[in-house]
Length: 185
Ligand SMILES: Cc1cc2nc3c(=O)[nH]c(=O)nc-3n(C[C@H](O)[C@H](O)[C@H](O)COP(=O)(O)O)c2cc1C
Image 1 (spheres, rainbow, N blue to C red):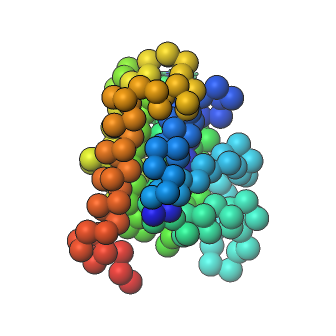
Image 2 (tube, helix red, strand yellow):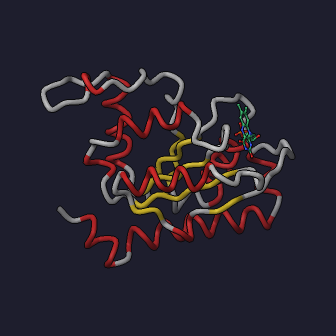
């Protein structure tokens, strides 16, 4: 199971990024979780570079290839001003017209229990993009400013259990007949 993990935060000590790092360590022999590393390096989305005859920037081509190679995508994001961080929305805008993202199972995490609007906004965007948002893989994992790194998250069995459930839910979405049917051309 290959999972592309995308954090919506560029902060060096981001709780959402640490959550995804912890997810990568939960069952490394079963789930190969790759953390997307170019959130801050992608150019601003420009439709002039996104039509059929356009050659996408290298970083965009790499993003699309990483999504295409993944069985599922796992996003963990903060909420900014009741919405989706601009840098994450930029990633998604580059993927709107990319067939690699269609019907892709997606899990949605947030590391803050206070996020009352961002996750719903993100879910609406992902549904509009024809991805398959997986409810059981969409969870609030409330670290609430505890400043835990990935290793410390894994020391907390309740948090580890949630991450394991999320990964298993993504695997079920990938392997279930309904998921396979919706992903066929
Ligand atoms: C510019 C900005 C706007 C924010 N707006 C909200 C908000 O509207 N609602 C909320 O619950 N938290 C808000 N927050 C708090 C973050 O969502 C929260 O601290 C999050 O856990 C940070 O994630 P990170 O550690 O991955 O960077 C905001 C933070 C920043 C920097």
